Image 1: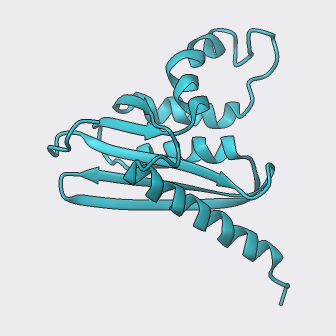
Image 2 (image 1 turned 90 degrees about the vertical axis):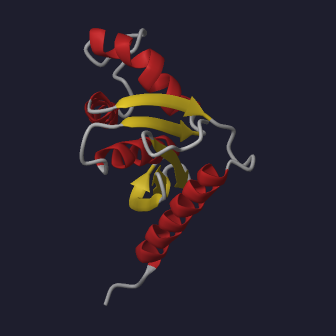
Length: 157
């Protein structure tokens, strides 16, 4: 990845799920010059792929104006989906080549909208391989998933 000169927003995203499906979380780290922003959230019943998508959606949505973005993800699903598969899905009315509905089409459509606002370079990084911001995004996602799981188990008052 390029050194951050402040002209490009450097983003790392990750998703996590405790069970698949199950309680999940997403995390994102955004860097612009010396500014660092950490984002996270979760859902009680979701999948790892949905959380990977949410991380990218929320990271791009957090940028208030159009930006140059280098977005790293350890999800081949997200990277290939937005850079390769999306064009066929859109052309086929959100159906796969096998004429089946695209999984997570609601989130893919949101990601397409956010992606269009920016000039995004989508970068795949190997997960759990020492990529600092990806490790931090992973921790944010895991913490959010655990928080959602704990809230789900908490007795009603």
